[in-house]
Amino acid sequence: MRINYAKKMNQRKVRVRFAPSPTGPLHIGGVRTALYNYLFARQHDGQLILRIEDTDSTRFVPGAEEYIIESFKWLGITFDEGVGIGGQYGPYRQSERRDIYKQYVQQLLDAGKAYIAFDTPEELDAKRGEIENFQYDASTRMQMRNSLSMPAQEVERLIAEGRQYVVRFLIEPGEDVVVHDIIRGDVCINSSILDDKVLYKSVDNLPTYHLANIVDDHLMEVTHVIRGEEWLPSAPLHVLLYKAFGWADTMPMFAHLPLLLKPVGNGKLSKRDGDKLGFPVFPLEWTDPKSGEVSSGYREKGYLPQAVVNFLALLGWNPGNDSSELLTMDELIRLFDLSKCSRNGARFDYIKAAWFNHQYLISQPDEAWVPAFDKLLQNQGIITTPDRMAEVVRMMKLKVIEYTDNEGNKKKRNISFVSDLWPLVRFFFVAPDAIDKEDKFVRKNWKEHTADEMRQLMDVLSGVDDFSVEGQKAVVDEWASASGIKPWNAWRICLVGAGQGPDMYELSAFLGKTETLGRMQHAIDILG
RNA sequence: GGCGCUUUCGUCUAGCGGCUAGGACACAUGCCUCUCACGCAUGGAACACGGGUUCGAUUCCCGUAGGCGCUACCA
Image 1 (cartoon, rainbow, N blue to C red):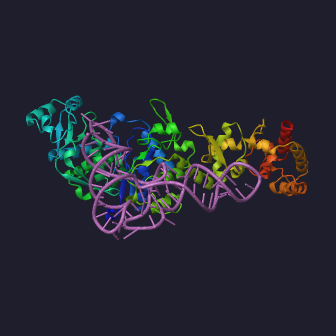
Image 2 (cartoon, helix red, strand yellow):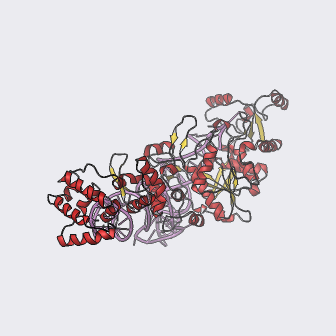
Image 3 (cartoon, rainbow, N blue to C red):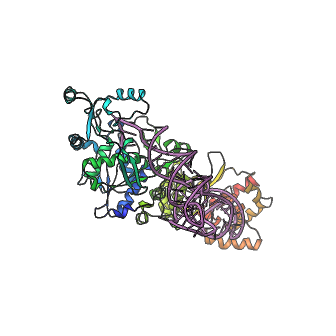
C-alpha cells in the first residue's frame, strides 16, 4: 500500500532543493526534476533552494553555473535561496563549504563511524582485477590498508608523512535499511550489500556527493529530497548517514523520480537522440568551451517556456482526470501531486512537445509572433512593418506545414514554431516566379477557358476602388454569381502559385491592387 | 554477475477486486470549405507471461520474462 508521506510531513515548513552539478549544460531531465521541486515547494508555500554541487573539481565546466541560472530564468522557475540569490543558509556552492564538511567528517571519525583508508586508486584497481566483484566492506576491509586494519602508530606515522588518504564510512552489515519514498513506498535493502563509501576524497580534498549532500540537506533544513531514480540505490547509504550523525528525526522524505527514456530504442535519453531525431535535450543553446561544439536548445529552437514546462510536467505525472492537458504554471502548482507520480521511466515524446508548443503558440496574440517572425523574414532579406507581419500571422498561423521525416516520407504537421512559417508565407512577400504546370492543383484548376476568366476578373478588380476584403467581396461575389464563374482556385494559382494560402480576398487585399493585377497578368502569360 | 526499481493502446497515462478498460499525442475517415488547414465528429489500437488468493482479478501475492538504474577518491 502506498502511504501518503507528503501529507505526513507535519509542522516543518517545506524546504526543497535542486542541486545540479556544473559539469555542462543542464539536461532536460534535470529541468523536470527542478520543475517538480518547484511545483512541490509552491503548492506547500515552501522554499526552493538552488545549490551547486561542485565537489568534483575534475569535471568542472566554466559557464555551466551561469547556464543553469539563465535556463531557469527563461523557464519561469524561480528559487527562493541559493547561488545567485543568497539566503540564510549559505554559502550554496559546495566548493565554498569545505570547512563545514571537514568538521562533520571529523565528527564521524571521532565517533568511530568512519575510518581512514590509505589504499591508492591503483591498489584498488588491482584488487578489483584479482577478486571478482570486489567490494570494500566488512568482508574485505581488514585485508586493506586502513585505520581499522593497521596499528594506530602506523596510521599516525603515515599521516605525519603526508600520505594521501580517504575517509570511508563504516557500514555495519546485516541491518535492514528502509527508505521511505513518497513515490515508491518503503524500499528496504540490507546493509550487507552496501560498500564502505568514500566520504572524503584525497585527490581534491573535498567530500564526495554523499557526505556533502547529507550535511547540506541537514544544515539547510531540507524536508523533502526530490531527485532522479538514479539515486535510489544510494538512498540507503544516505539514510545510514543521517543516523550516524544523529539526525534521523529530521531526515527528509525522499521521492525518486522515474527517468526520461529515449524516444526510440533502449536506454535513457541522451544528447545523441536529440541530434539524431532533431529535438533539443537542453533548455538553452550551449557551446562547449573545450570542443566548441554547439548543442541546440529549446529556447533557440522556438519553443515557448510555458510549452516546455507543461510538456515536462506531464512526463511522469498527470492530474488524473480527463480534462485538458493544457495547464498553466498556476494550475500545475495547484494540481501537482508528488505521491501520484508514475514509477516507471517515460519515453521522451518530442512529437507531443511540438504539439504543446503549437497550442501555446496559436493561443498567443498575433503581435507576440512578430519579433521571431521579423528575424525569420530578415534572414530571407525581407523588411516589412510589424503590422503587416501580424497580419500575415493572423492569416497563416492555423495552417499546416509539409515536411519530410527521417524515413524520407512526406508528412504534415501543425505550425509548431514560428520558423515553420517561412515556406507558407513566402508568397506574401515574393511573387511566384515559375508556376508548376504539372502540379496537381494547377492541372485541376487551370483549364483552357481559365485565362479568359482571369482576364474578366482583372477587369472587375480594376474597377474596385475600395480594395479591402469587403470592398472586393461585394463586387467580385456579384460578378461570380452573375457569370457562374468560380474564380477562386485559379485566382489562387495566380497570386500564390500553388494550392495553399489564406482566403483570396484577404490575400489580394494584403497585396494591393497593383501587385494583385500584376501577378494575375504574369500567370496568364505563362499558363496561357 | 550482484542489488534495487519497474511492466495498461505505437507514445504519455487514468484505473487503487466487479468498468463496453477512460483521456491526451500520433494515425485513419467524415463534415465544413475558394486551396492547405483550423475546428467538429467518428474509428482502429493496450492490461507481458505463468501460477496462486478470491464468488470474481488489469487491480492483491509469488515466480518467469522484458525494460531502467546503481554497482568510482562522478554526481
